[in-house]
Length: 104
Image (cartoon, rainbow, N blue to C red; front, side, top):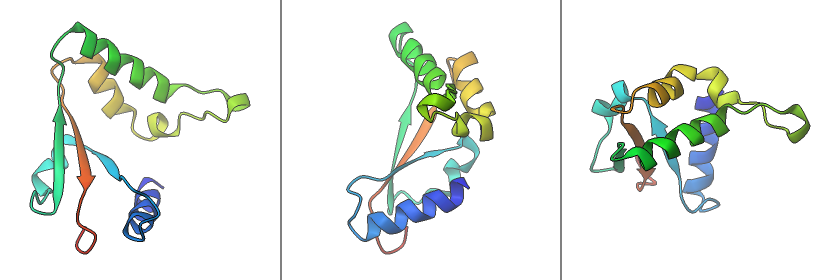
C-alpha cells in the first residue's frame, strides 16, 4: 500500500498537481539514493528538545481514533522504524526530497 501511494503521489507531483514531495527512507536504503537526482536530508537529535519533538511526532503518528478517522496506518505497517527513533536518540531520519521529474 505504501508503494502504491508513493507512486500515485509521484505521478501527481510530475503533473505539477503537488508542489513538494518528500519520502521517508529506511536507513538501509540510503545507499541506493542517487544524489544527482534527489536531495537527501539527514536529521539527527542534537538536544533534548529535538528528541522530545521526535517522540511526540511518533506518538502522533501512532494515534488511533476511529471517530477522528485516525487509523495509525503508518505505525501499524512500520512500527520498527518509529520505535527505533523513540527508543534510541542516536538514530537518524532520512528524507528524500524529489527534484527530478524525468528519472525519479
